[in-house]
Length: 411
Image (cartoon, rainbow, N blue to C red; front, side, top):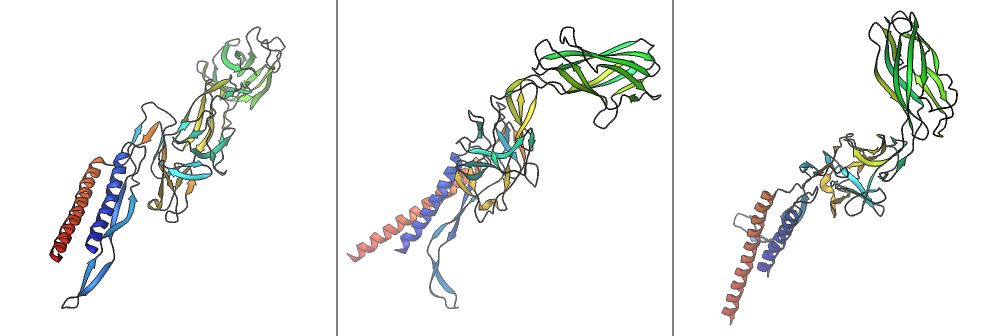
């Protein structure tokens, strides 16, 4: 009964098309969903004769689904109204790498969340993969590992070991003229101390200096905290050079370890930070490397996927970097559910690296990629598929009527 089989093949193929369209519409609001389309091809043809000119007379056997293609066009990226740093989007080429049970897959959906242990995971519990950091330095040559945020981590205090001041001392000042600079430093318990660096002009191109703590902060006798600054005729510091080392305040009143730090007199390029010019004495900058203790508060992700944790003491720490993968042929990927895709021989193996490098897109933090399904297009396709389904249904009905008529003739 070829008449029926041809129409049935049309019903079956258009049923797949309707299901594909229905799935697209169902996922209209699914994060980073990629719409699909159904393609058809004809079945084999039977040659039932020839025309008078020798042309073949062929009869088709119907249609079938030749494939479903996925549209990997980037969806609209919209900021998350809650500014949730766990929500991320990829602007451009690439996929996030996720893993569950040792099996890795790819996804564009960056609506991640944090587990109670600080693991960055997908909505269905898959681990988000990346490169770990040791002491704030990411090692991109290491193997991929699950990204972990230091939720609940307390960062210990660090005593000041170095400080620096950018200062100009007025060359027109008379001998005995004082000037001072306050500097906040920290001891081993994280307690802050308001140190004061005092300068007194002692003669042409020379100033004495002293570093002191408030009365009662340290009961021991300080060492290496006084000396002389010497400048040349151009106002450049010539002595001491480099730094004043091991300025020490022993026996702190709060029970912390003895304070011992260096006063760096040069910047990173080796230029002295203290000068003596014919201008009012002033301080323009200062820095020091101590800090009080802090607890984890939040994290942020930059465009390269580098994840930085923020602590209550104002400190930041790089904890890892997201992995981003690309494939040679995205059309060869297979959807595995949960917004994930698996590589195949047709897609080629995934090339894993980081965002903003190697042709990979950038990470947008606090935003999500929307579905790329166009509702107007889908409704148009739905009407066409519905009409095709109805036409094939009508064909079967017609063939059935003809069959009944034939049977009636036989009787």
